[in-house]
Amino acid sequence: MVTLTMDGRKIEAPEGATLLKAANSANIEIPQLCSNEELEHYGACRLCVVEITHKNRTRIVASCIYEVAEGLEVNTRSERVLNVRKLVIELLLARNPRHPSLLKIAEDLGVKKSRFEAEIKGCILCGQCIRTCREVVGVSAIGYEGRGINKRVATPFEESPPDCIACGSCHFVCPVDVIPMKEKDGVRNIWKTDFPLQKCESCGRYFAPVKQLEYFREQYNLPPEQFSKCTHCR
Amino acid sequence: MEDKVREIISKYDSDKAFLVPILQDVQKEFNHLPHKALHRVSVFLDVPISRIYEVATFYKAFSLTPRGDHQLTVCIGTACHVRGAQNLTDHIERILGIKPGETSGDLKFSFDTVNCVGACALGPILEADGDYHGKMTISKSNKLLKKLGKKVVTDEED
Ligand code: FES
Ligand code: FES
Image (tube, rainbow over all chains, first blue to last red; front, side, top):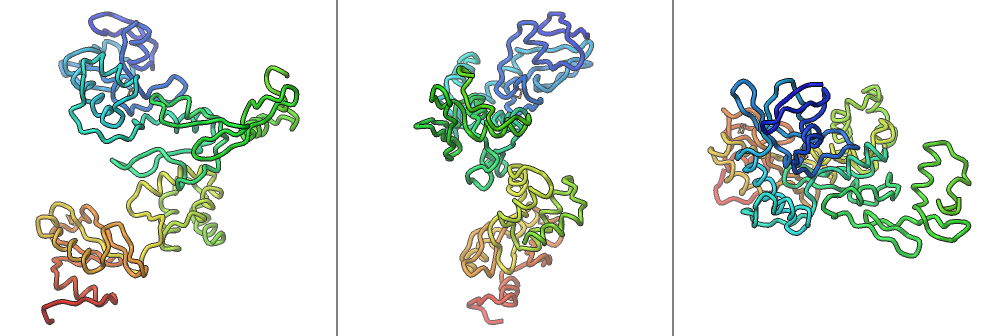
């Protein structure tokens, strides 16, 4: 355990924990959009910045990737921190001016309007979809395309993603809901691709994408009749 | 194509750490990065195609569409810029009828700009098929284009 000061309070945190994690356990709230307990540290959105003091020098760091250290002094709400956060949320609002979760953060920071001209993209490039697909699902069906101002989330060659199992994880994890997914007549559509759903042998309900079930069977070496029924009828 | 890709990859011991040089070799071989070849690279290296697509779209040096027989690149780095790289760019755009990043319809020329090729003292630089031509002027560029087989109509006689 290490001891550090956060907003004037002495707190304890396990070694290797991030400042964000330490803050959360101490009930200090820090806004964030790209950090996710299930995923590797990333540090893309920069909304979680805090100010740290080390030997009379202060620095702005992203709390979701910066680790706790003995005697560290952290200020999570200094003027400088709030200024950076305002800038960040205004930039994000320029990409996506409507999503409630962004508007909520803006409101908390006292931001009414973005000073930047809107350039609506929807996606805020937090990377959670890509990282979930890679790190949790393990298929890596989607990725980034391009770089700089042209960077975006895409399927390879913007075609139907060959590795996608239609699990929908990217859709569910997206904090600003920009990955559409629809289900109709036994077919799930995601990434502009139709994936048939498996019908339950007993009750006839469509319960999961065929490809996803195949993937699970392959992963865990299950017999082919596994998953012929839905969870209720099993 | 399959064999060629396999050959390139075995040169690098099928080591995914060499993805970038492998892609460079593939591009050299096929003059661009054909989708099919990238899918082969993905299988042989056991790297998801999404990853390879990321790398292939990240670097300006890679192209997913066929390139022209000749590659012209104007350096628009600071040093070249102050020495008139913009004029040169405009001129080449006009002669070839394409914008930076594009390839002419007859697949003869591809044109790009780049930020500093590290030969600032010789600016402005026009790179043609990998060769640097320094202290470039409009009329020098015309000569070069003619040499590469482009008809250039100019008012001046040289
Ligand atoms: S949460 Fe730390 S950078 Fe996004
Ligand atoms: S700016 Fe052109 S070579 Fe450096």
